[in-house]
Image 1: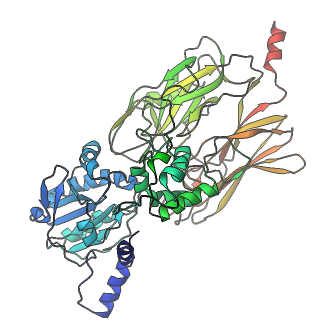
Image 2: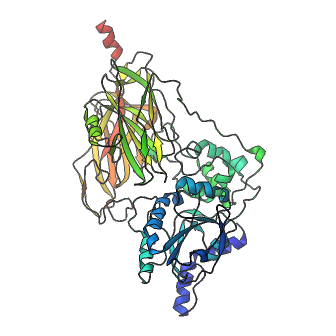
Image 3: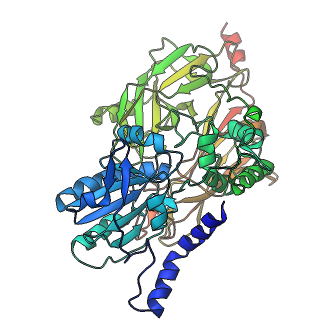
Length: 604
């Protein structure tokens, strides 16, 4: 970071405090450039087609919204839908929305990005940060509202939900209503959240470099999701992209938000995505050095990713119907597709592989088995393709499962002699969690089944550790609910999967032996509804008859919980909706005494 840029960053960070101090000490003094109350003089920037556009070309507008934005920042892309809506809703009232991209590394992407995302407003190029520097813009997205005299009336965020979809306060809309009504803006500044503006070229070399030190870590932990066509919001497959997001990478890994792995304690699990402390320290140091590139000859090749079936051609492929995911709507949508198996007899399944048709918008997939006919009834009631749902509850009590998929997961076969039973006439229900990208997308997810080629001795079974008799009092930030399941025979535990909704704060699942000895199977100290799944034990755990699986869930039903859907909080009980709650955990196990081959021998 240059000394000039460091000084400017410090100045901009202190801007609100400086502004208030100046007003307090010197009534009538001019506010600093970029602060509410300052006037913005005319400027000219080229649009993506190379045509010069001056601020004065919107002279007839009663207000102009300057949106400092980015092609790659996920927060900017999540705000496209709302900004398009604002441009349309306020157009008749002579409000103009104008985008400005100040990122040095994105100027060649602006035109294609606008077409791909369907931007309803022009985006101007600010490659030298001439306007961004004048207004002290450090974060994208930042919006600046100018009134008819081109005086800044509001500066900050679009709304209070950077994830998009469920804001409780729409700051930009409120500011525009105040400006158009001739009122003082009630809240003239808010803190924007997003990505740092990319101003400077990174160093060519340094103590820690991309090519020698960082690329191997990113390849190992990140690019399975952070590549073109996948669910992650930006690619990290090359230096230009990864270097541009060095500060965001630093924040994500140092706060342990990425790579996504919510288990914080317990027995070792397969496919653990966590970085080592040494890897995190390397990425932090690289970002602190302004992301040096290094010698291109040191850069390792990207890993190869198979687009087809990892375990070879499946014995049976079940395909969901094509689903069109609209650009408009909440960020998350859960859709269930009911697929008949048409099997002439029961089969044993040793492995499954799920292939999303459009990994760009598929967050995760769970495959359930329904033998009750309930899923078909739910499907018939929904006029769309498949049926909608809320959260991971499929709307019926599954009689089994056929695996799941999440970005970065590797399909695995069950141990020899263990299988999943798929009964004749059963329906497989693919629950697909979609994450809208801001543009209309289509998906057709497939499930591949691999039949057991050797005799199956034991069936994988699922225990539900459940407590549905609870009430979460409003205002309680740490309300614990416990559920238990007792083993009535010797078992071996293979999988554990906790489940909560939006009020979930933490959860842990323990095995308690008859003598009282406890083994922590899994603990998730910071529950996130969007990142839940099944955890496979590295070493299966044997439990004697009489052991207990104890599931303890803690909930935050206070106003301080940003995910709380109720304002003010209300009492919450068990229910299937995302706004209800569940105290539920699943354990995948086999009964040690079971030997299905012995039964077959007797039948012969």
